[in-house]
Amino acid sequence: MARYMFVTWDGGGNRTPTIAIGRALAARGHEVRVLGHDSQADAYRAAGLRFRPYASAPGFRLDPRPRGLLRLVTDRGLADDAVGWLAAESADVVVVDCMLVSVLDALDRADQRFAVLEHTMHDILVPGLRALEPLVWTSGMRVARPRSHARPIVVASVPRLRVPFPPAPLTAAPGAVVYAGPMTPASAARRDAATVVLSLSTFRFPGLVALWQRVLDAVRAIDAPVVATLGPALAPGEVRVPPNVRVHEWMPHEELFPDAALVVSHGGHGTSLAALAHGVPVLVLPLDSTSDQPRIGRAVTLAGVGETLPRRSGPAAIRATVERMLRDESLQRRSQRLGEAVRALDGPTRAARVLELSASSP
Image 1 (spheres, helix red, strand yellow):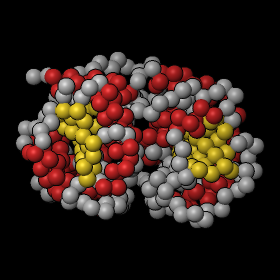
Image 2: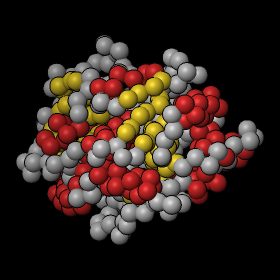
Image 3: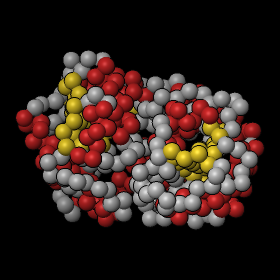
Image 4: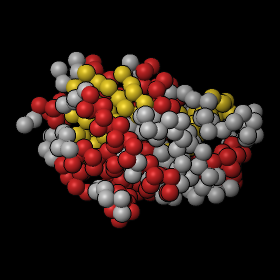
């Protein structure tokens, strides 16, 4: 049995892979614990994982603007909390969220064995981290060095959105990049599926309410069933919901997507990859130009498994694109082929296996 400590933050899209990998390790007989923000406690404890909140960051609320994200990634209090828990209770491997630069830097300086968990496509994340490096250097922290020492970098995604995928061996070598695959359960969407699923961000990005309204107005008269998961970022009554739209605050992807013919999203990696894992194409309207959302939109467009529109697109443009994508049989076939390849990866098991290699390697 090995001891694993996950260090995470309340980032929405990173919760599913952290829980999935933690549960996979626990099912294989390992000891797993999680350090995160107090707002995450219920979700992790409900998943059966031992959880401790950061003492230094009570009442955390994400500020998704660049300045707020910079404060998060360079927060030395999070690193102090992680090092403090390790001093009281050691771990064989610490699995650190890719955004927590302060924690990675502290563990690297302390020669503590760690792995990095990435929750978006690696080729999309790396340019952003390179751009971040000059900003964090002023605080004395490093980005590139800890990542080159990570044993390994575990990517909760696929190497690309085209099949076949390149070979993906499991290795815990320092700095190795291992694509584990998606972390949500998925099954092939029904061939006669017709539902349009609307699922935008769980964070209140600027423009979220206005985008929701344009999307809802766009599907008002569409000839297909429509389901919207409005999420916690919207208060009741903030948007006008057409009578043809069935609304949920939240539903698991594995319950919604088998009936979907199209998913309309903001380009969050978790939602987009979950849709594609079910063989469902995506229409992306990015909310945040500084995040991975526009890049996810470009990736699905280049791979022929989705399209992207500017977030300020009007209802008429959104409706025309939705109707065209629903009629596009070649788009549906490409998405189905990609879904078959994605489902074959079994992400949680692959991630658990490579982290076991990390714990047992010299």
